[in-house]
Structures are given as C-alpha cells and as structure tokens.
Image 1 (cartoon, rainbow, N blue to C red):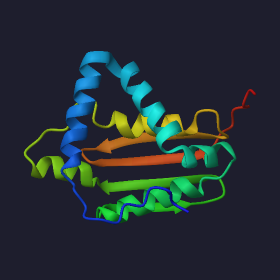
Image 2 (cartoon, one colour):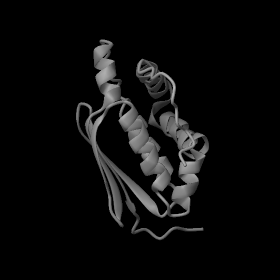
Image 3 (tube, helix red, strand yellow):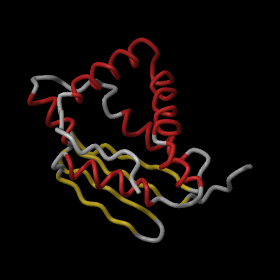
Length: 151
C-alpha cells in the first residue's frame, strides 16, 4: 500500500520551489550536499519504499512511480520484468511546469532523480541507473545488482 498518496488538489507550482531549492543547495554545498538531502529523503521520508527495496521488493517503488506519474499526467512507459524495472519518461511533468512558469531547470535539477534513485538502492540488492536522454526525458532503471552486498 502506497504510504504517500496525495488525493487533494494538485499544485504543480511546487516544481518551481524544488528547482530553487536544488539550485541553492547545489551552489552552496555542491553535489555532496544534494546527495545528503536526497539520501535522507529516500531513506527516511520514503522509508517504506526503501525498506521494501532492502527486503528485495520493488513493488512500493513501482506503485509510487505509477501513482505520481499518472497523477501529473506524465508521458511515460513503465516495464517490470524479473530482473529490472524500467521507467522511460518521454515528457517530464516537472520540466514542463518549469517551462510553463518561464523558468529554466537548474543545472542540478536532474540530480534529484539520479540521487534519489541511487539512495533508494543503497544497501539493497538493487542498483539504479538513471540516464538523462534529453530535456525532460530520461530512462530510470532499477535492476537486480550483480554486486555482493556486505553486511
């Protein structure tokens, strides 16, 4: 069951706030600062997703991705096999909203996706590969790791 299921009015302008926040943290503290923020977000705020991944279950992450991409009307495709979950984002709603607001995505904007995925997979049997394929386009892959985890 998805822990974070917002059902009220959708306020897409928060993407502008996130853009400003990642710009501030990225300029002030660099990518290490952003990494710390998104690690805490992935592993504490979205703890149920992280705990599921640690247990070898990506269903919470899949549900999360589907719910929020559908909620924002994203143009995306999601594929789940035994070995990997692949989300191909053809038109990111966050980038589209920034453009509509007349804003340019921060040079750190895509780090929130890359670093969140990496933090979700840290200490789990999965690894994240996030490929930014264009302005508002990416392929996010969570796959079973070939690395041996240390306890």
